[in-house]
Length: 67
Image (tube, rainbow, N blue to C red; front, side, top):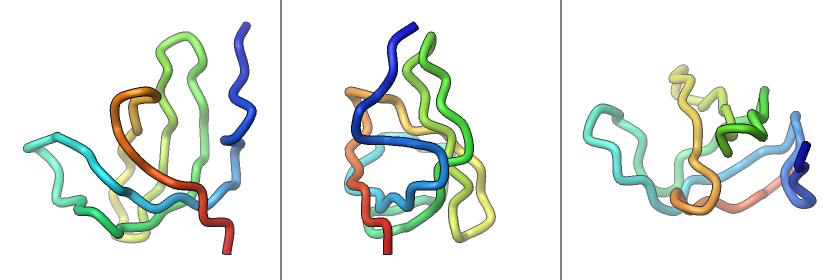
C-alpha cells in the first residue's frame, strides 16, 4: 500500500484549485483531512464550510497549512 509523505490525517489544508461544478468550494477555503484513501488517491477533507469532499491527489491543487 502506498502512503503520502506530505499529507496525513489531521492536517489542515487550503484549496488552491478544484474543477468541480457541484461544490461551492473556492480557492482559499480551508479544511481538515479526516481520511486518506490510498487506493483511489482521494484525500477526504471536512471543510470549514461544513462540506465533506475529497481532493483528488495529482489533480486538485491544495497546500498543507497546519496553523
